[in-house]
Length: 342
Image (cartoon, rainbow, N blue to C red; front, side):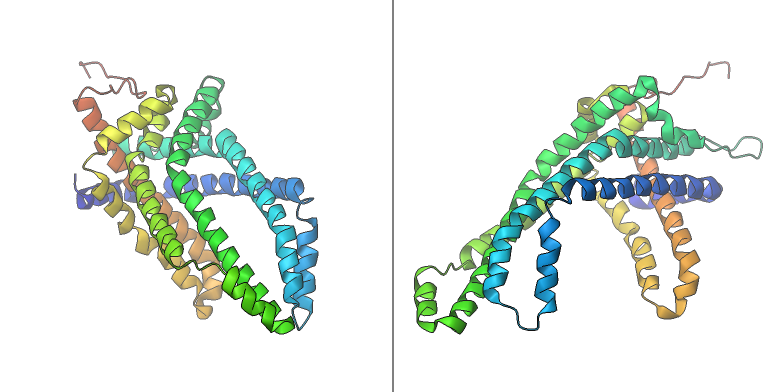
């Protein structure tokens, strides 16, 4: 199917099930928001000790009218390791909470929209899936296999994102060195111009070529990650249908079936980009501030529900192709074949 056909089909389903879809998005966002809030509190409690002196240092710098560049440099050398440690702790805790809770709620969220696509109007009534599907992966028989499958899938994605993360650290380090040596040069110019001239001639690092190379590789790593993420984009949906498939098989199915479909999937995402930008644009209009308090949350729920219904429609086409090619059966995905007499 083309992007236009997917959008048309998903809009019709969304129109018929708008109320339940808004409710399921609200519950999902509430649960994820609650998880992130608890994660922030936990990260603050764990890394608070390592950041104890950073706040005082920043407060001292902003309180004085004339900044001592030597003090800034000393503070950078002292507090950068603390900031890196706090960042590492936050990443580790975030990975843990996501693997044990957020990923499972996300799979339930995807399952709801996938099942919502399959239900049809019967005797004038359009049924919708139960909200309990959000928690279906927390059942004893599903929890461990889902955590394992999602962990494997996310680990594979993380490994493909590793060049991006390493190059991001490289760019950040380069910027830090530029700031540091500029501060030190100005400090020397204020105190000892002759020593500043010696420093510039002997120790000054020019990041022109290496900076250009690093930034080029940085953008190439983004392109690589986006391509791989599109290849693996249907793994979550396969796992939402049946987590017992395992992370490796879900990724293999997704990668094989997404060949030649990345453009359609990307266009599908771009089709909803203006809708996601609209709440941000409305939030910047002061005259609508009171109205936005009600309008923006509803608009966001509407856009998110329609977007995920479109993703479910795309997945249904990918899944049907997999069944057609004999790569998987509907029974393996948790569906039951109706008797021929029906």
